[in-house]
Length: 214
Image 1 (cartoon, one colour):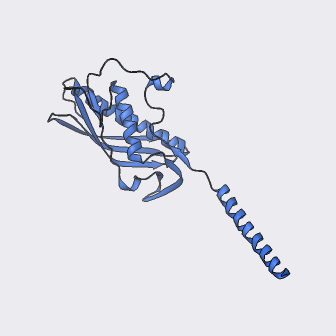
Image 2: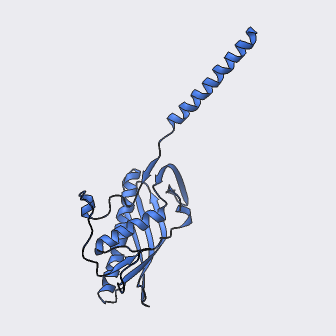
Image 3: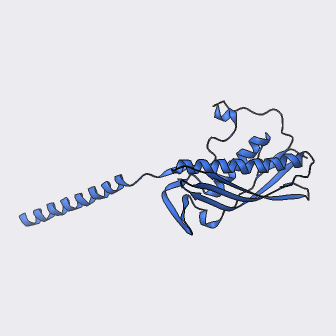
């Protein structure tokens, strides 16, 4: 009987040590960090913390930005970084809040609508006969090189819904970045703003009746 008690006590001690080791391993695991391209975008009112209010005057025209596409190799929540010629690393602890396609799409939408003073009405009804400019964006390259550069290469098009004329262009924005992932994400945000400015310029020209070029 004494021998059985000793054996049970020894087993309990062993399992306790295993549990403590597991908890220690969990506690020492590095935390995940999440990044966004669109956080903070939305115009001076949002930045100043003003309360939301309804815009009384309808915009002269609207935009519509459907889902953006990105290369399959970066279509994941983890940051995919370039570390050498032909080599990339997948960072488990550094993640986008949502997949890059959604991050780029939302950031572009906020940038363009802010530039033009209009509304993105994708999947939203619009007033009768209101002009709507549909924007399509296909990301060809989305490269992240920490301490070096952030690059976004996009083929995009703009056309008036119901019209036949389509303007198709390409924008490549490369930003030099400092060390650290915060700097890398900030570089991508600047790249999105530059591309959004290109698209806004085209929409503005079409809305004015001009024939803008790339």
